[in-house]
Image 1 (tube, one colour):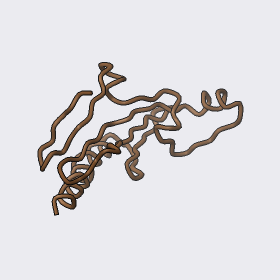
Image 2: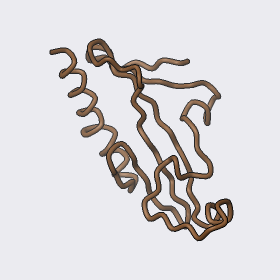
Image 3: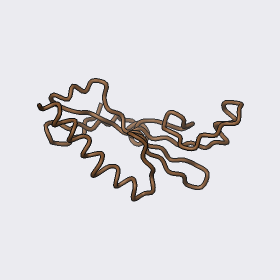
Length: 120
């Protein structure tokens, strides 16, 4: 029963808090991936759930960020690349939010309804 409750709390956090905030910033959503185009550069964000989530006590997740520029990716891959909706994995600059800001891995944990930040 707790497993379903924690999954639902995570889904509600995504649906009612994170997604609307990013939508207000003109990000488009596809699953746990969000992106927006500013000039010719895509700004990408992905919500990564921990592979160790058991959903019986807690749900941990972090944010991955990236920047995609088609011309740079074409040069790097030596082929013409045209990705209309890139994800973080497609980005030439990418990383977890903690490593890009303070060089500390940030994970957020929903523990029985309470949201906490954990540093690794």
